[in-house]
Length: 105
Image (cartoon, rainbow, N blue to C red):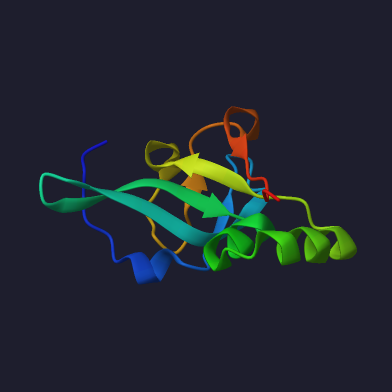
């Protein structure tokens, strides 16, 4: 897959689906690092835990997520997300290949 530019604001909040069309979670955070003077996306954070990762509210997050019974979230490497249609991002791997997000104490 050739590298291309995407307007990141279009991705935030988009529902990501698995290959079978099952919803996986919304893109809540996009991680990037600087390489040769450019920012390069390294991973996408999906789901409820990703919201709290963005807010850096780990203690409050754990209590809130437990109260609401929300324990999902995934780290998706940049190359495991098909962005051919930025309004409908799709995983190009199985859920078992992804790392789960965890709120640290």
